[in-house]
Amino acid sequence: MTRIHAIIPIDHVRASDLDLKEFLAAPEGGGLLRFAGERALLLDAAALGLLRRELIELLGERAARGLLTRFGYAHGWRTAETLRDAFPWDSAREWQVAGGRLHALQGLVLSEPVPHRPEDGPKPFAQAIWKESYEAEQHVLHHGLATEPVCWTLTGFASGYLSCVHGRDVYVREVLCAGKGDAVCRILGRPREEWGDEIAEEVGYYRRECLDEAVRKVTAALRRAERQLRSRRQELALAAGVEEELPLPAGLVARSEPMRRALRTARRVARSDATLLLTGESGSGKERLAQLVHVESARASGPFVALNCGAVAESLLESELFGHAKGAFTGAAQDRPGLFEAAARGTLFLDEIGELSPAVQVRLLRVLQEREVRRVGENRTRPVDVRLVAATNRDLATDVEAGRFRKDLYYRIRVIEIRVPPLRERRDDVLPLARLFLARAAQRTGRSLSGFAPDAASLLLRYPWPGNVRELENAVERAAVLAEGDAVCARDLPDELLGIAPAAPPGAPRTLAEVEKEHVLRVLSDCGGSQARAAAALGIGTATLYRKLRAWGAKSGADAGPRTSSRSRSRA
Image 1 (cartoon, rainbow, N blue to C red):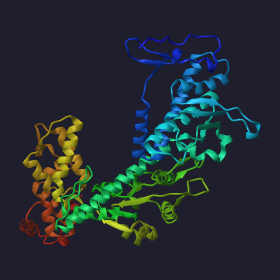
Image 2 (tube, one colour):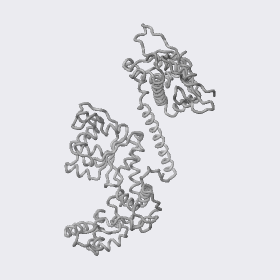
Image 3 (cartoon, helix red, strand yellow):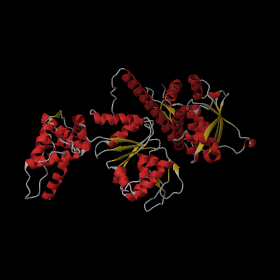
C-alpha cells in the first residue's frame, strides 16, 4: 500500500475540507493503519453483517440492538473527542457537521443534510438523509425487511458524536429506514428533553440494563431446558425401574440416604415458588441446600442473596432487609435499597430467622403478605418479586408456644419444611466430604496430598461431629496444614478426634476411662436415648455399647442423661 501522509494543520477547518487522503495513514510495507492519528481497522461489511446476525440469533433482537447501539455510541463519542483535538475548527457547527462527513469517509453511509422548514416545527440539532447504509443492506440480506428501523450502530454513533459536541444528551432516531422498505434512511437528532416520551423506548437501548435483561432471559431459558432434560431423564429412569442419579452442584455431597431424601424434596420444591423453611443444626449445610433450590428453580437467572439474621445488630437489621431513605437516621447519606430489592427476581436466604426481633418479624410478615416493601424513612411502598428461603437451628414451634416467635409468621415461612440431617446421621457422606475439603485445602496451601491414611479415615468415621460439616471442614483444613507426609494421618487431626479432652484445670486430672464414659453418654443423650443410633454414631456394635452402659449402671438413654449431668455438676 502506498504511504498516505497524515493531516496537515491549517488555521481554520470546515467539514467540507476533510479528505480521506489526509485522514488515513499506512506504512508502505504494511502494518498498523491510522485514521485521524488513531489506530484503525478495515472490516468487511459482510463480516459485520454476519456478526450482527449471530448477535441477533444468540441474544435476541432487543439485546443485539442494545449492544450495537451502545457500541455505536461509544464509537461516536470517541471520534468526536479525536476530531476536537486534531483540528482548529472554524466553529462548533463545523465540528458537528464533520461527524456526517466522517461517516461517508469511512464508507458507512452517505449523508446529505436536510434544510429545515419552519412548518416542520422547532429546528432539530441534526437532520439528514442517509443513503447506502451498510446496516440496512446487511439486515435485509440476512433477515429480510424489518418492521422497525435497523441502523442501530449508525444512530448510536450519531448520538454519541452529538452528545460529545454539545455536552448534553442528544439522541438520534430514524424516522425512515431502507431496512424496512423506505427509499432512504432519514434521521432526526434532538436533546433528550425535547423528545419527551416519544423516544423513551430508544433511550433504553443506550443503557446496560437492556443487555443485562437479555442475559437473564438467556440464562433462564438454559435453566428451563436443563430442568426439562432432568425431568425427562427421571421419567425414563422410573419407566426402566431404576433411580436416576442427578448431578449435584459443586461442594454438595449426598451419598447417605437421609441427605438424599432431603435433596429429593428440595428438588421437588424448586419447581414451585413456595416459601421454604430449612431446619437443622448449625453447620449442617442449610445454605448449600438453599442454593440448590435457587439454581434448579425458575429464578436461577436472578440473584441469590444471603443474610445471617443473627450476625446483624437489631438496629441495622431493618435497614439491611428493607432499605432506607436518605436522612432516615444518622449516617444515612443516600437512598439505599435493602436485600429484598437486591434479590429482585431471585432468591433471598435468611439464615437464623429465629433470631429476628418481634418488630422485624412484623415487618417481614407484611412484606411476605403484600409482596411490597417500604424503606425505612419512606412513606411509599415498592413491589418486590422475591422467593424467600428461611433457615433456623432452633425449634420454632417451641418458640411460638413460648411467645418468642410470631405464629402467623411461622406458618407463612413454613409452607414447606425440610430437615437437613446432622453429619452424624450421614456416615456415608463423611469421607467424600473430607476428601473434597482436603483437595480444596491442598490447592490453597500448594500441598500435594493424596488423601487420608487408614487410621485417619477411621477416626473421621467414628467421631460424632457435633459441629457438623463446618467442623469437618475446619478439621480437614488443619490437618492439611500440619500433615508431614503425602497423606493425612491420625496425628494430624484435632485432639477431639483422638479422644483427648482439652486440658483440665490444675488439680483435676481425668483418666481415659472417664473421657470415654462422658463421651459415650453424651452421644447417647444426643441420639435421644436410642442405643442403635448411638452405637452407629460411635462406630461400635450395639452389644458393645450395651455392655459399657451396663458396667456404668446406665442401661438406657433416659438413664444416661441424669448421670451425665450429675457427673458434670460434681466435677464443677
